[in-house]
Structures are given as structure tokens and as C-alpha cells.
Image (cartoon, rainbow, N blue to C red; front, side, top):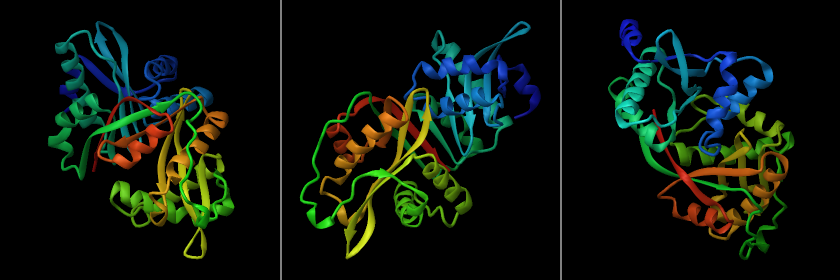
Length: 307
């Protein structure tokens, strides 16, 4: 995709500027649950005055002016915030120009993640350049809760000698890391300790230092182990997005996820943000049942394209 072709388009993609940040924050606030990841980065930029390299502005060309109409967060994952256009033709034009901008100006990310309609539409447009995808998950249920979690009880867990759910500390790191890796392999499909270990470990340490990693110990096979864990992976716009919810394989089916989520949701709402969200594959019936049980409600649909 050449620069000349991009210049003839009606919409441009360019690095965001400090003068854009307030408007970008307002765009994210239109759907804070769906837009929590870009909102997080916009808020950091507003607080610091430094615009990160991964934050891009989508603008409409109108004479000499450039109207701000959307944003792209391009970190390890790429997420787009693009309000609907006035009509289908206008919307198609915006998305076509944005796809051309992504191809011409950005490298292929580790994944496309975001609202299902725009994510899958853009994937269809960039696929000839960015294919093959390792996996496409076209419908992931977005869920959220804005009040206290619905109390549930773990079932027959006396033998596990459970501790209370609490924020992890640096002293927990060596036992928390294997649980996180096990979850990552099962969810994403590769071992982060073989591919990008330094970045993976630094991110986990960052979450632990920030009080955003939660865990619960129990006894399995005569050893104290992490039996439940979850992290606040994204935090912005008054929303805390849970990621990495996991129960030890030997302790599944006993209600630990439900009871653990109640504790985490209430702690996160008290410490981090009034709304707690997450998204889950639509084929993961046990997880959906657990989230329903604690009072989370459907808030939309995500999609993920993994490379």
C-alpha cells in the first residue's frame, strides 16, 4: 500500500497528539466496558502528558480540516474504537480507509481484539496482507457487573484447606507464575516462557506490584499450591477488566471459580473501579455459568484474531 494511495483516501491514520486526548477519552467513554484497553492508555497519556507510540488517531478529511472520528491502540494487540458512521456507504468508506492505513503504516500485531463487528470486518479487509491467522474467535461474550457480586458457596472443599482470596505479593511470585503459564497455554495455545518470556514475566510482576493479581492457596497432593487466580489486566474509564481467571485442574468442578470471583469482584470494586468486566469464549459453558452465577450480565460481543 503506497503513501500516494493513502493520501487520496478520505480518512487518515496518524499518531495521536496531546490535543486529541480529551476527545479520544470521550470516544472511549461512549462504551467503557468495550473500550477499557484504549481508555487505559489514553488516561495514562492524559496523566503524564506523554502520548505513547501505540496511540493513533483516525481523522476524516474535510477541506483543510481533519475531524477526529476514531482511534487505534496498537500495542502487542491492536484494538479499534470507531463510532458508527451516518450510513452504510460512509461506514464502509471509513473502514476501507482505516484498513489501508493499518496495512500501510503498522506491522501485524500479535492479535486483533475488540468489538466483534469492527474487528471481524477489518480482519476481512487486511487478511490478504496479514494472513494467516493462527486462530479466529468470532464471538466472545463481554460481561460486566456494577454492584456487589451474588454470594455463592464453594462445594465440599474442606480437604483443600483453602486460604482466603487476596492480592498476590512478590513473595507469591514463584508459585503464581506456573499457574499463569498453565492458564495462558490453555487459552492462547503456546508457552509464553518459550516465546517472549521476559515481557510476560515483567507484565506479571507489574500486576503484582500494582495489587492487580489475586490468588487463593489450597492443599493439593499434600502441597500448598495456587488453586484459584485472576488478574486485573486492564484498568481504565472506571472499568477493571479481569483476565486470566483460572482454577487448578485438580480442584475444578467444586465451585472455586464462583466463590473466588465473588471475592475478587468485591475487592476490585473497592480498590480499583466500580465496574468489573471480562470476556469469555462463547463455547466455554462452565465459565459462562460461573459468571452468570455471581451476577455478571452480558454487555456485548468481542472477537479475537490471533497470529
